[in-house]
Length: 579
Image (cartoon, rainbow, N blue to C red; front, side, top):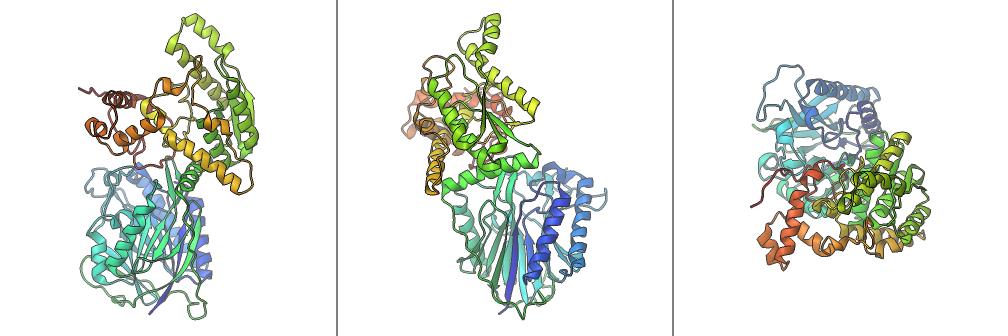
């Protein structure tokens, strides 16, 4: 029975940064070869970054990708590590501008995995099933593959699949099962969602049992626009027992020795629909290496997962887009406090700048809570009072009521954007998912910003995360970063005397339950009412959500952590008449 040593590279590629991605792939492969790996694998689209969206329809981008892929093979071979197969995810397009379209009229490329060995590409697997739901739009930009691919390496058969291929019944997994492979290797670009691990692991366990072989789930890590890839790669045996698991939210190469069945193909073709590629005898050091003990990283509790996802999403958005620092308004409230704490965890206190912008209606505790937060986090805070700017505009335009309230928020937005332009900061907008859902924000005011850290975090979860982050600090003997008063006091925009959110909105636990049913579950009015919510309240909340679509279209992006985030997940018309 062969023992395969796998090096599973959970990397954080930068989309389009070929020089960096190529260097990382080559260095990782060479290092893994030195550690006795028989096979090195990287995640879905690991050469380019993922998702590449309409870059998949550009022949120049696809040709450039192919050139870099061939360069990787050459460099690995030149280093002396070329004898083992290295599997790299990439978009596989035509080598010239003459191509036949299939399916979507714009699709010219495949979502593929290349097998590199001895300085060349020895095999390419094309993803069969192209997701066209949630954040995925692959059916529009990619062509579907048709053949399964099996590598014959070191006396074993390693079958490949890419992400969605294992989520559908039939297809390549069914064909692979007929071959009786030694191992199923799945490359993934699977974004983080709350409790998604509860779905991933059982699915891979079922596929391992289906093919009667160990299964590898290899995922990307890192933030890309509004998506966060959480890593968490793992290996199961044929019965579904977890043999190895990488950490979440960090880059890592997981080295694991797996006992596998002998090859049934012996490197020969086995029939239509399955391509068998001869990939050598494995690492030359096989006979001398000592068996490695694979790591099984502990699973994080759900609040730590969410916090780490938000931190990674912000860090990569800042770093990958070249921002040196961030700036945000500090009101003393829970939302800005959580956003500031996330920013400090993401990029450090020296790169986070807070602005207190008190109005005539700001309470003393709001100012003191903002100062307390800044001291706890060790960040810079400045005060820019808004009354001298608000008063002349309000007087000249004769504003009162909601118009006057919105003016205050918009002046704050002007201050933040002015400081951003003058000093080069990225403005963080601090609105949570609940407020964004019902339009409880001022367009061009508190919605101003280039990145929204808690855009997909409901208000009740904001409080929960704040409490978790403080307790996490206490367990390490550190000062809790978020003032207790910011957590316990009634939330308020403080745009008029004595104002609190519940003057306008239902209690947040009730509101979030209605929103979860309407937005995430996508159930209608009658079903929500049947769950015990008042008809008048349900009608009002639904109306607020529908009417706020125009605001959401103009909002900043932020990390997706839920099954149904605003933006890619939920696409509804702005102009919509409800009877």
